[in-house]
Amino acid sequence: MQTDPIQTNLDARYRTMLILWFALSMSVLMYLIFVQLTTVEVNPNLKLSLALNTLGLVPVALSFLIKQKMLDRSVEEQRLDLVQFGYVISLALSEVPALLGLMDHFLTGSKYYIVGFSVAGLGMLLHFPLKKNLIAASYKQF
Image (cartoon, rainbow, N blue to C red; front, top):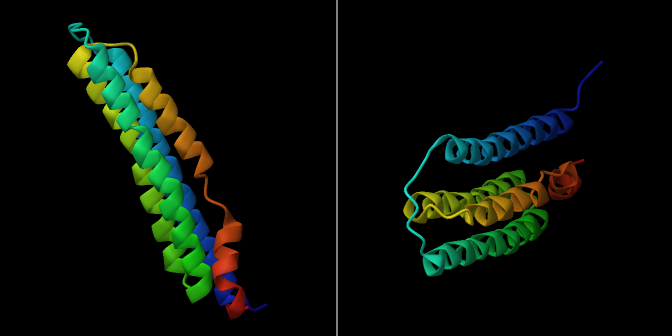
């Protein structure tokens, strides 16, 4: 029985995307655990906390725009690598609010760091890799 090389390539790329999604999601979780295990001096600065948490919304919003552009382009050009690239960029941008929340925690000791982690977690969940995007980028190859 002959296996289809295109289907094998799709499965391998999808597994890679799932592994990357899982690894980046776990890094956000590890940052959160790190915050819980450390103690910091409380220097309340609500403006800085608000600025950092608000700034964290920008990369997540951009991640959706960039991913959609990359997915559209991958279908037009029939390039599977653009699907992976779009997901990697969007996941990396979704991790930024967690890093800003981590920064908020260590700079101000504020409990508002959880906002950044929540935004990052939501972004990661919404960027869960879908196999249909790979199939759409390769439908002319079948």
